[in-house]
Image (cartoon, rainbow, N blue to C red; front, top):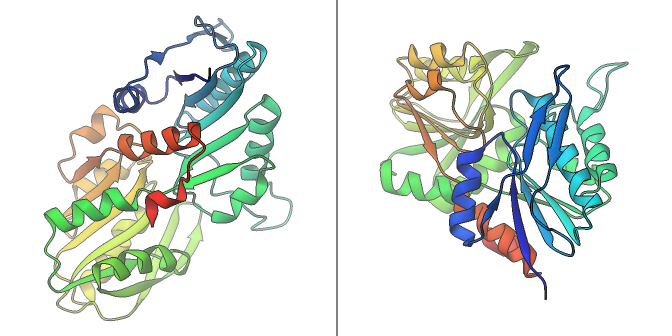
Length: 314
């Protein structure tokens, strides 16, 4: 008889516990220890022989530690004779390095894919990939699920849809914004963004009409919030009224908390719990966190039962 085992890494215990509650499956906490030199040790204290195991571990900061922890847990489970191992990584680290942007640079997203596969993962589930083509880096089944239903419910319940426009912060996010606009029956606009260096962007112009409109900026992640603050400033200059930001992954590297807290142009910054907030970020009133536990639980349950995952988003 098939059985499901849910294993939690250390990177996002709160989300793991919520998923466990939704699935009504006990959560296995492996013994994770570090030697004096920083090496990671893992011991699975539950019998997983013949089980279908799902490991919840988001590869957020510290990215390298959390990624290595995930790889070691996969290896431990493989050697413990698990029937299948699914890595549930709500945030896929290194996803921004998906191509050679300049000569002699790595494609680190592909390297991470190879590491997960060689470690012994049979499937990967993640949420809102930075670049959809990363799925092609894997030779094992890969499910990229979306936070859009969670955001859509929040928008309909908390934001006036009258006089609303959806905004993409760059050309690459237009397809994502169009999905929301179609379901909300609203117009879209785009920010013509010029990037002058890593984590440095200068918004130059607005393509579309935002004058006297309430706007929602939709993105997949917020890192230092430099792009977001510049986008909000540009939208205000072009006549936008209330400005909201929605992004799946709140990376919030320094000085994001300070920038968001001091930005008078933003009404709210709404993110999900794919990456846990630091105590400093929890003090920023403008940051609102929505849970993805239910939709991740449904994806895990459907994967276990060999049902369609894509039908969650039709």
